[in-house]
Length: 429
Image (cartoon, rainbow, N blue to C red; front, side, top):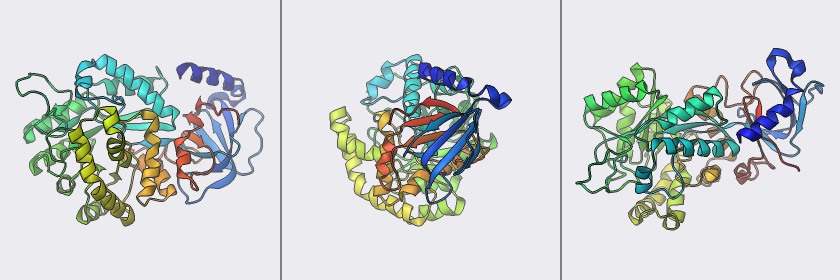
């Protein structure tokens, strides 16, 4: 991908000579354009990019002789997609022993590769909310991409998922007499929680992630049970907020969701068993839900083939019908929804989340906004990203046809631009 990006950059450099300090000029013609703000697509729109910024969008922009022209035909242009729940260190088919076998260095290499796969599939920005590495490889990947050492999506990182003993981030199927430090952060008590949050921030965390309940892909814990005490939740949120960091929570059961909300968390992941009271609390405070629908379906549909233990598949199956009812209610309530995939499956299939969101009641435009404008607001980057507007960063992707008519079009991304650089050129039509 780096070689491809270099070739493409070289191809636009001559067009940019006349652009001066603004950088290369690119003129992109879109069959349709969804800007992330309105509720309809516009047709026959041209986007003008200079350097890393959009300078103009319109139907009748005059041809710019200094610009490199890109005609995307009938394709629909959208803002660069944003995934708030991407696990770049996880590979399909990973089981417990795989995480323990791989060094932090190897995880960094694989994580960079997986991040680049996500970029090629239209996601120009990812948040990784805790991955299984004792050290901080995701921070190193983030910083290497930001420096320009490698092509990849911009990353926002919660280095670890902070868990209670026996909780979702603990490794509960290890033998009790096996002295192994698990590649997550496991704490008990408010003081230990504060220290863990400080350690995450010390090493570069953008976000703090807590396991507020048990999980599906963990052994011997209850997805319905609240994992931390109220005091532990409050300590985490107080410590994170004092340092200017936001807190998100893995949360399945309604009790854990509400306890985390009372403590002041900023975002909820999964929300599988969310109830009306929790929805009301989230709406009152403007807390978004990142529902990650496809992952539970994947565990049920593909778990046996990919080596997921039978007890995890059984957990997933026991939650699916309740999940469908709860998430439908959350969508119908008007709660703010932001896109997240929870990639324990092949990274190139994460775009399947869009169709699952629509199946549970979100409109295609609602699903697109979840992965663009809404997700950008959650990250606090909406002044620069999340919509296609003059003055914003030139993150733009294209898909064939009309995703408002067939949302599965979002599973085939044919063109990707990040910061004004074409990182995936459109193929021949």
